[in-house]
Structure formats: C-alpha cells, structure tokens
Image 1 (cartoon, rainbow, N blue to C red):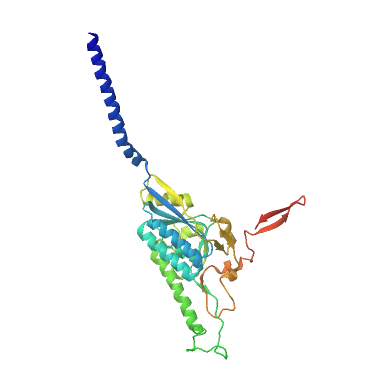
Image 2: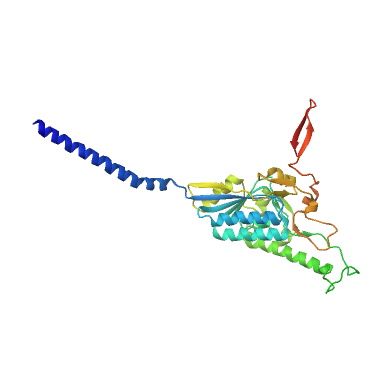
Length: 320
C-alpha cells in the first residue's frame, strides 16, 4: 500500500514539473506578442522653423525634414514657426522641402509668433495650418534693394553693357515681379478654394493676425502646437503615438525680436538688418521678408553677457 502511494506521488511531481516547463515555454513565446501590442502606431516629428531664413537655416531645415522622411517610425510632421522669412532663394528651398515631405506624409503647421513672407511661403503646402490669435501671418510678396548703377571705368571692364549692373531698372522690376508671381501662384495652388482673398488683395502684402488669417483662409483654424500634433495624428489615423522634437544643427539668427523671444531653439541670437541689406550693393538682394522687420533690429546681440547693477549696488552678469 505504501509503495503504491509513493509511486502516485512521483507521477504527480513529474506532471507538475512538466506543467511548469510548458508554462515557461508558452509564456516566452507569447511575450513578444504582448510587447508588440503595446508599441505605438508611429511617431509625429516636430520640426522648428525659426529665425531669419538664410542659407544656413535652410540647410538645417532641409536636414531635419530629410531625417523625418527617412525615419520609418515617423508618420507625420508638425512644423512650428517663429519666422518672418528672409532670403528669397533660401525660402524657396524650404518650400520645396516642405512640398516634398507633404507628398510623402501628413504635414501640419503651428504658427507660434509668426509665419510671415518667406516663412509662410515655406509652410503653405501643409495639409492643415493652425495659428494663435496673436500670431502674425501674411506679408506675401518680395522686396529688394534697388541696385546702385556701376558703369565700366578705368578699373573695371566688361564683356557686355549689363555685366556690372545685371540689367537696367526695367529688367530689375520685371525680375522682382516674376519672383512675386511665383509666390502668389504657390499660395493659390496650395490653399485653393480655402482662400477668401483675391489675387490683387493677396499681392498687397498685408500682415494679418492669426484670427484674421483664419477668416481670410491663409490658415485653417486657431490653435497651437498641441492641436497641430493631435491633428497630424488624426490625419494619419494614429491612436497611440510618440512625439519627437528635432533641433536645428546650427545657430539661428533673428531680425525680429518677437520671434526671438517666442522661439525655443537652443542656440540663437539677434542680428542687425544690415545682415540682409546693403544700401551700397551694386546687385539686388531679393528678400521674402516684411519691410517693417528691417527696422526692428538695433544691432544689439542677444545672448552676450553684460554687467548690471542691482538696487543694493552689487554688480551681476546678465544676458540680453
């Protein structure tokens, strides 16, 4: 009898061990399935468009947009703007990058302090554009310094009558107008029936508040970065997603103090308006920038340490 009981207990013990082993194997097999179920649907990349647009900032913006397109996890891009535009050629480069990205994935823009002139040109291919009530939007058009006439003389000889000046005044204005038309055409092509402005009204180059821009169709709705991220996820059908914030690879220069204050880019400084315009230039510099911005900067570089005296006479270091 005792022998039978011991044999039964041995069989039960072996069965228990077998069940434990089976449980471990099954658990290990199912663990990756459970992990995959907890993964996000994709990533929304947040790309800053900050400061005055020049070759350096355009290169940085291009790099960030390229990285977003090449990352298999990124399903949508949100561009946050604190820019009043800048050089025409650099603005056009950013526009082409934005358009290329919008052809591959959802792109939504959140206008923070401003998206004026070249910055608005950049973001106009967006699937959806938000702006805050106090945001600055618009200034569609191009400006340039009138070139100083330089005639051949004893020091300079040319192979053609317009080699020094690039052309006469009539040709200069024709070139300026053609650049403006390219800008207007891009706005009408991308915004289409959303616009409540005629081409003549758009070409006046007015600056609008975010609320006015919603009313005239330059932007779609009032909102900030959070609303833009949620909209991008919605358009890509992402219910569970990650947000990845990108940063520029170089220092960003600002002509407008309002954009400088609003921007969160880590490396930034103010520059004088002469960074873009030289009154003595013999060739034109074409800009997509509000003319008022050229009067804002006073040449003071923000970020440099200065000495300040407190109320009790103590001298401290501060930054401007």
